[in-house]
Image 1 (cartoon, helix red, strand yellow):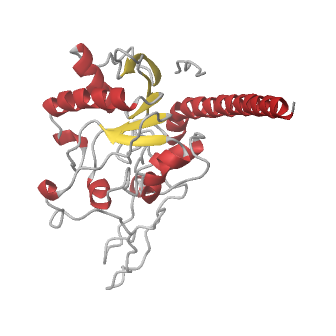
Image 2 (cartoon, rainbow, N blue to C red; image 1 turned 180 degrees about the horizontal axis):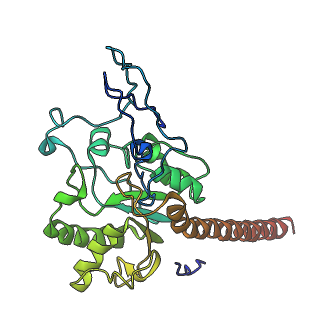
Length: 296
């Protein structure tokens, strides 16, 4: 028996200009500001102590500047030819508990052939923090999810791109139709759209218009996917995007959006455990009755 989901809602010292004894009148203007990271507000933080210029000219040599290592799929000169990238193979089977639906494969995902593979993507981190997985997995473990958790993976659009800005409306429409058939054939109990944009593409194809910006809420939706003659369809949950490029929500806000899905999955597991125990007791009783008949 399944339960219907509930709807939710450095500080660095700046060296003075070489061979100059001019004092800085407003030293606070030189204090470095913190560049807003993903999910932070557009505010700046100034240094608690102003920068005071030295009375001596700067030396002829400059101190070496330590640079942060950046993990990238390539520079502008060495990006792979997007036309040579392969679509990502679905990880799917019938009767899944949950099917994750992404937008389309990125470059890292296409090159590695593993879901949500870019180092800046928070997908596996959010799965763990929301209770969907028992530990924090890595992308190479995606193929184990059907057996371990009864989860699957697919995308609305198969074509790999650097980001979603180059995707065309026709691709959304075609992908949404293919996706409906895929869900109808495999019949997962629920689907999770990883990002509002994924659900917006599906919704637009269904209703001829995009989501209402004021009326939209993350979480469980009223619609179902894959409805057919012999099946009522899969529940739809819309989660926050896990992409490192998505900075409209703070990390704790994303976790709050994902958490109800984790709670629902835990509830389903408890119900299945209870049902399995009842079936096991019933089966043992049947076998005990048969043995009694055989003895008499």
